[in-house]
Image 1 (tube, helix red, strand yellow):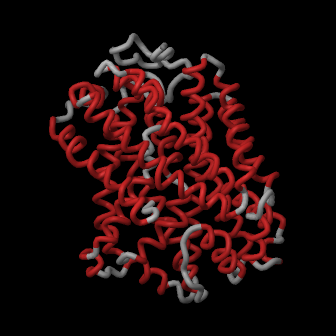
Image 2: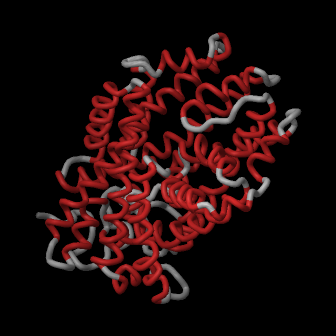
Image 3: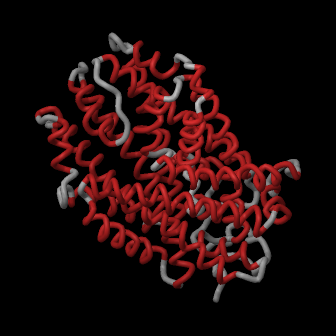
Length: 454
């Protein structure tokens, strides 16, 4: 079995630019790509509600703790093994386990997080199809001519949104076919700054709505007693873990495109910071507006596709701001979808020796071919529950264990120190092995117990 066709000899770190798909031009392009992957639906339709539901500003304390820990130790590990192995998911797991003479086992295990990425992409593309359909209605000026719940029910019915669903998949595939790292870097340099600018505009507009102060109180008045509740810490941990896109797959492939001169821990922290800013902006743009018009806050698809259209319908120039909002959501979603597709494309490309363009097209066909049968809202909900509660957390746990226990700190620490002025101390490995990996196990177990925590 060819462990990796794109990296250096087995047991050696890959040289800069050795991947056949190229590499990121600079650290800014890499960070924006990673932020694009991390910023997604969870930042927009879950974080604001969870922030208010679990103690307001008090929730931010455990959330910041877990974001800092997972960002520094978790993201860094996935970036580092990708760069070390010089390839994506399958090759990186094989690389780790070959150190124990069990490369074939590692390769087999690597399919679990890889299928997790594909599974998320399948469900995500269905949801992004809803976003595109809603954006189209906003651009056409028809979004407010129908009752939001009826509009959502229509487009989330079986085979009810095939065109927009297919358009989303085709768009993501086209961007990847245009060039792996080149396409990813260019699209994120445009879409991510645009996302932040549009959400700042929305947040400023919402600030001037009469009654918006109730939303700020919901978000930021600390209810300190919630810090004594286990659920607050569990939900903060889950929100942080999933928000950073730690899947044991997607961020590994981005790491494989990273040059040796880049400081991985620094890039990881920057990714975590910008992802958190995105989540806070979403809260500032959404919840004050919801409370300003006396609408009960919600989370998940009902917030985005039913509650918010009701809010925009009551705002002056509401259709304009609705278009701004759904463009922002589309930007966040497509950049995340590109990462999911690329994790699969690169591994298939490396494994089967086919062109990247062909694998991108095949990935799109598989995603759409499966997704078209789960366009019903209940079906895609069950699909995403299965993937996000079982497959993805288990894949992330496999990644954490493979890096910190199987490969070991000596080698991954060497990779993490490349590009830094000062090498990392052994404390980093201790935190990774004895704090991060057990927490990844807790995320997996608690997700099953709670029926989802991220």
